[in-house]
Image 1 (cartoon, rainbow, N blue to C red):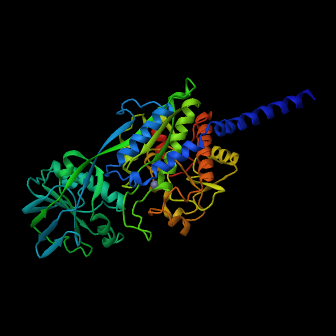
Image 2: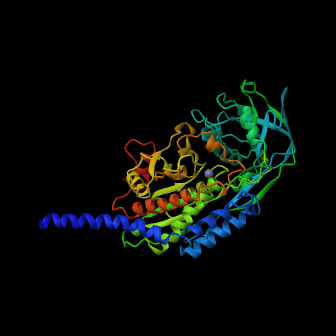
Image 3: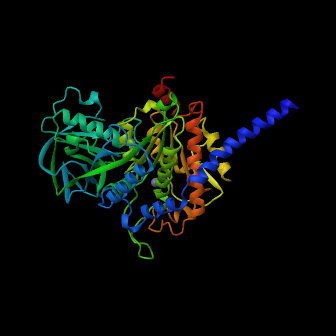
Length: 486
Ligand SMILES: [Zn+2]
């Protein structure tokens, strides 16, 4: 009798506690204010939150003010609430032509000038194979142009082509070369597709001096240039314009309540940029408001800041609103390479990114099933009457296409907490990167449950007596061991 009463009492106490956390979030969550943040961020005034547009300033100052108002503190080493990022916007040249032997290459057709300044003249060519460090070793390229194949053996994905290219440009510069021309000869990547995509202004992180180095691709799918012993090139590249853009990640933090666990951080993040102004839709609307992608996620993080500043969990909370996700995950990538909090103190990242939703009874968690913390997300959303479901469209590669991957690659468990979708279907495509991605037709009851269940998920994980781990055998598990030293 005594014992069972005690058990009953304990059971009641623990379920009351769980219930109490949810109740507390319900009570303190200001739905009206959250909706007004949502409405402002996705308003026409912000012109689609494109990082090279002047209206981007409205977005980041608003976010910083909301974080300050919430009571979250600036991160040491940041510029107030900002991490400044040196972006550059590089436009294709007005004209670009290169003659090598009998071959003629023209900008936008079979030539792409991707980086650097205008330049013209006749230059000697030096073939450096794939342009590895060994390939460049001992070669004097002073005043000459280095010619290489794109990528490296077994490194021929689009991402790898760029990262390898960047490394080669550094080597070419160090060897005294004036430019680098890469033979694009990857049959698996359609040249038309990639040249269509790249023959327009590109935003990237300014790499300083190397950025001035002309970096050029010529189409060579038939390997006509390979092994031809071509000795020189006549180059004429004019009207290449590069503009500096000041990028801003918006960051803040909340100190944890536990004297020991507060040295560990849970990173709550979402990108706040979107794609700006584009082709008008049938209604003549040309502003891509990005309510779903990703104003809704930005609001989740702002309200998590507001709640946790008043109710700090045991672990510290790092709040991050990334810029330039749509330009290739640039803002989060910059932080991952230049972290203001040591990455091995960031034990988990609950990121948000969204395309849309087609099922308001679920929360889709991109990466569900890959870490030991998943059950807490399942519990948290269940308390709000929702079911957590894994990514239904693995073929879209969503996990590796958003900001979370910059942290997963470093070893940090990093799922994305997204609006419910059961397939990447017409209902999603209706809004995904479309001018019609507005707040007006968003189910605002669902938005509020989404925001609150995100806060509860984060709270459970930030208070957990264990550190989240990757499931054994996950492709990022090994990096995790290196990062955390286990
Ligand atoms: Zn997005």
